[in-house]
Length: 161
Image 1 (spheres, one colour):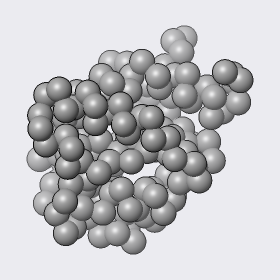
Image 2 (tube, one colour):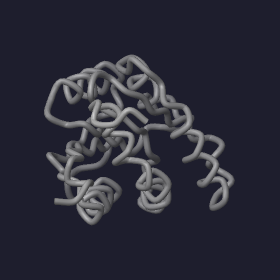
Image 3 (cartoon, rainbow, N blue to C red):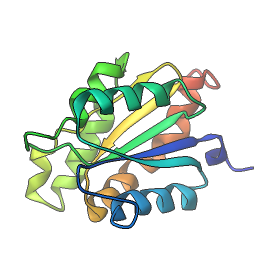
């Protein structure tokens, strides 16, 4: 059993316009997680509506998931509410993860500086906001993959360092 198999993930695609057939970044994120060895519990699409998104993220932290990855809703558009919904749920911020994602993304696109994605912990769940593009999801997942197992272990109390 691989270490990554301890990761039970949910992918949340945040969009007012995507459906199952057009949610390419969500599908790509699920594939990346599965290739990594994580168990993908589900992939859901939720609108950019703040309260609905906040409630969805909150309820996922009450589920069997120990990792919630969002894709989309992190930009400057009026309906981009993913960071605010995440901040309304988390108990501890994990700024190093968000900073590392932006730093690496900036090597590929100048638009990284307008991504407002955040990350944090609620209970036993790590929540990380990723961009809404497939390319952005791939680049950002590559940044977080090396630390996911250790982060989940720490959150679960399986390791003290």
